[in-house]
Image (cartoon, helix red, strand yellow):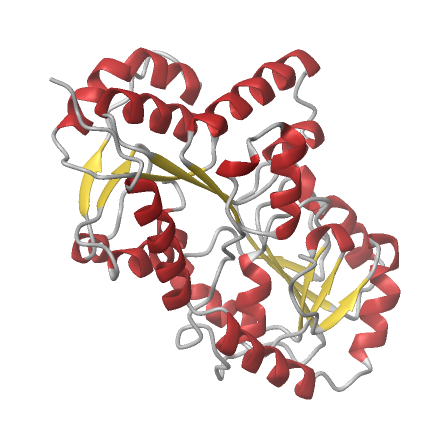
Length: 346
């Protein structure tokens, strides 16, 4: 949970529709507001190794003692490999179902990060194995639904997609201090699969356009003079970030259902996205193009009136992507999973 504040709206929406929510986390420090929606449990993992997978394997007995103290009906988890391992192990030992919400294509990410082929084969195998042990796997987009079937996950375990959402009372138009130049924003991790290096080359060729970037940096890049890198911003500062821009760009080579698009829309900001970054079921307010066309498209949008497009984008997400809807849909899926619950054995 190193990005725990990012997930607060998600789990807050679930907390409103379940009787009791227990949060197990291994990394990060939750802010006090989490105590208002859940019972917090810090998992103590072995510090002998850096790998979270091996940390889990070395800590399984200790983790089981901690989870046994929680009288849970179902486990709900995100889709990183170690959380799949944790959920599968705890589910088997406690005789309760587990449900996974799949947020993105980790396989493509590993490929783009040049993980060795042997390691990818092993991890892909384990990933499919653990997903097939889940009661349900919830993809967050139609494209992820299709990929789950290709990976060999049983069709009867794959639910309909449940998409990310946005709080339009938090993400909204704001009066903020900003540049008088046309400003392009990028929000997300600085990692290979986001193709930030290519975006920076485009920015360097556009000295009269202002670029702002926010996100944790996990690769070496050089920022041109017209790019203001703000680092990893607290989630509560992101509405102000979007409002400093005229346009959000997302040049990623792979995505699930990007929250940054919904957040930008809610702030009345149109987007420029690659086809790989944009979910097919989402309505486009802005422009889609290959990354090689981003420079020209930014120039076109700079000379366009984006006000009406931004307003339509906000109305769209307010209507279709509320966290209340997300919480209810997740709750329905968890209830279905608990109907398969096996009695605990002594």
